[in-house]
Picture 1 (cartoon, helix red, strand yellow):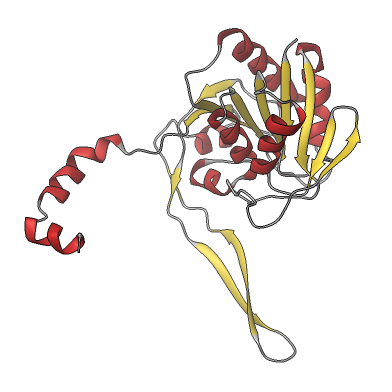
Picture 2 (cartoon, rainbow, N blue to C red):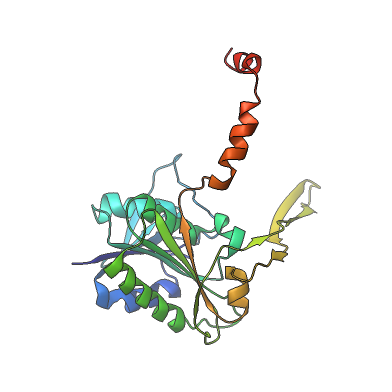
Length: 257
């Protein structure tokens, strides 16, 4: 029987998980292992300095007092006792686009899946005021899950899916957008006049190339971006070889002292 692991960074009780479980239930046995509390913007963090606890919420549904990365590892090693056939992380409340994916716990859950050997999807939906309607995102996720389960993905590759709130024009395969990164840090003072700081949302100054995830969702399309765990900048290898080759034997000797 097909085993599908669902996680997220919004917490084990989130609506996005409920909708995914319903959508994927016809494809196999669905297991939910997700953070007990919201773990947004946790990135690919792994908890190493304290023990983790598992709480059984209901049949095949567990909360872990850790990050999405923790949850995938705990699921594989302690709950499923094997690598699942598919990992789906989401549905996140709010897009995960471009350079911002490096902060995303949603994307990290899918990344950990591929590192452990499972194909994976990270699914996010546009944030709106008022109630969320996840049906469109759930529908495209189910369809992608069927395709991936049948055909697979290249090794160590996963899909980052971003869905508009309004009815989409269709689906586009996209690249990861780039932007001029500038995060706002606000300073304030407590009653004892000690300074403290809030990191605010980054200022969005996106660079356009006509095929990025950011541009496509803004234009009403569902964006599907293939991502990989290999961060090697292959296009820069020759440049770095040339740079490192300029180190003299004397400098190398100093480094090895």
